Image 1: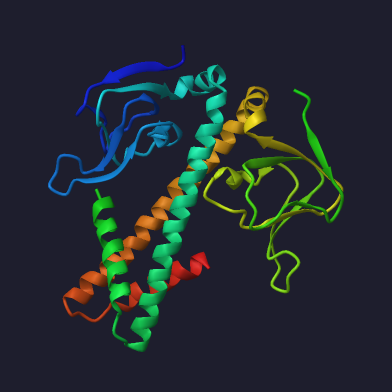
Image 2: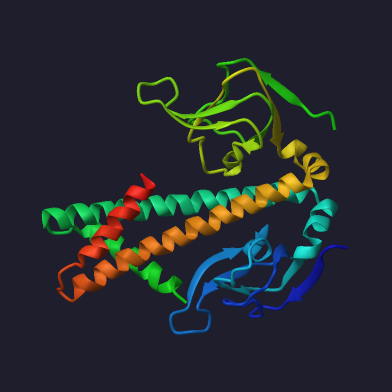
Length: 154
Length: 150
């Protein structure tokens, strides 16, 4: 079997932010929470996931994890490692499609975010050049992106 | 698996901007042009593809196609959708691996870009809150960022 099945109890840390794991997880049952700065005063929950894959970046890149994955209840995962990646998908070829969709969805959503911050920056430039007052909506957008930056700088 | 090669004559449209199909394509032979605003006065050609895959963002369920793909000459493409994906992976696992690497690289790059842009906003806001004049280098970086995307 190309996948390693692991059980976690509620509150267990499945994967730590900053670690260099070279595997990803398929969630077979239960729900996981994805957190920035877990356990610290500026802890932020980014998402809850109860199906498909998490941590796929670990398999596909050698960058450190940028978030902590925590079990929200009893969780069963399949840990899919680099050496067994191709083997795992040979055994479960139907899952390749969902991994591709997962990555494509992820890319689409980040591209949308990039467009959104770019629009805010355009507005900021315009306002700066005309030496105008910033309206409430622009100020809120700026605060939002600023706080995202703070939560993402480890 | 009989590779299902779909044939297009020169000028035929493979997929249209604004539509959504959960499939991607691999060029078997010929050449494909990727256009924004195809057929309009504002038409812009984005790329020529004569090998490899294209249209993989069709798998992003929230998105409509952001460009039109047109056969530039007699062209054959392999359509890869959910039904054939398993077979395709079995026959061509390296190609699928390349696709996965490519998508995840783009996710990482977009994420880096995103965090960098948020950083620019944060710098600007920090200066603003101190009542300071904005650093012209920051403004220049902001302009570069925006023009890099346009």
